[in-house]
Every structure is written in structure tokens, then in C-alpha cells.
Image (cartoon, rainbow, N blue to C red):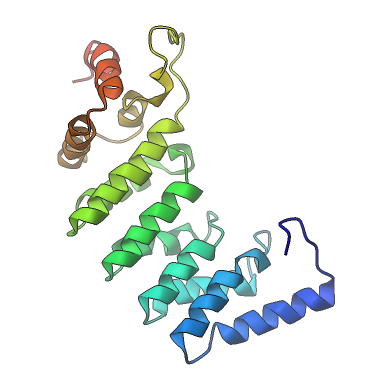
Length: 213
């Protein structure tokens, strides 16, 4: 079905009812496929949307990690269901947490939509994860995306610094470094260990020279 395809009311209601039934199936494979297929049936303008509510329930309570992952991928993140999504960043299954950080990076690409306390909590969860691949995914997916989406600094010399809009300076200014200093230090080490000299050079010239540390 094309991305811009439209369904008449009766057909749409039928598809919603079938999806809801399948997402309650005894087989986890069926529940996972139903969750995967139901994403486009969500009505994000309706706070009582049945598909969204069912995806939230599956994310929170389904016993199988595949179902929780497909629900993560399908759900349209809004301010009201964001807390449910964030709970999957501490899922008991490492593959679900990996999926959650990848999806989070795709769907929440800017720090501005999150209050500072929430930003710090996410950084703490990502960097304190017990599994190294999950920590790496958090930095490579979420932190890199946040940095890349930051606006360029005022009066930036784009000729001298073509990547000035993609540095860690703005990222550090948008989190409470004093509250998550240990985690922030490990993020910086991972970025610099990855030979991201463009980040280091601009960080040194702007952040250090401005005497923020």
C-alpha cells in the first residue's frame, strides 16, 4: 500500500479491529507481525487511539522481546506516550534496549523537545547500561544524532569550520554536566577515541577557551 494511500472509514475500522485481535494472539510471531503492520493505523491526534494504546501495552507488558521490539519500531512517539517509550531503555533484554536507542535516535532527533532533567536521565541510562554494545549504540546513534541536529553557533566561520554545526559544544551546553559529569566524561572519551578530530578541535576552541571548564 502506498505511503499516501487513503482508506474509507469502514475498511479502516475493519483493519483496526483485525490488528487489535492479532496483537492479542497467543503466538508471539503473530503479535509481532501485527504490531509491525499496525503502525500506519495510528491516529496521533486521538489521545484514546486504540492502536497506540495497544502498542504501548505490548511495549510495557508483552513477555517476548521480539514483540516489544516491533512495538517500539511501530509506535508514533508523542509527548504523552514518550514516558512509556523511555521505559524500554531499561528493558530486561539487551536487544530490546539496543532497538530502543536506535528508534529513539530516529524519532527524537533533537534535545529541545526534552526538559534538561529528562536529557540527563537518558544520558545516565545510556552510559550506565551494563552491556557495552548498548552503551556504544547510545553514543553512536543517539548522541551523534543529537549533535548533528544542533544548529550552528552564531557567526560561525563555515569556511574555517565546515562542521561547526556538528560539534559537541552545543550538546554539552544543553545538558547538566555537573549532574552527570562521570557519564559526560565517558561520552567525550568515546567521541575522541573514535578520532572525531573535527569535534575535538572545535570543542577546544569554543568550549575550553570560553572557560566553561
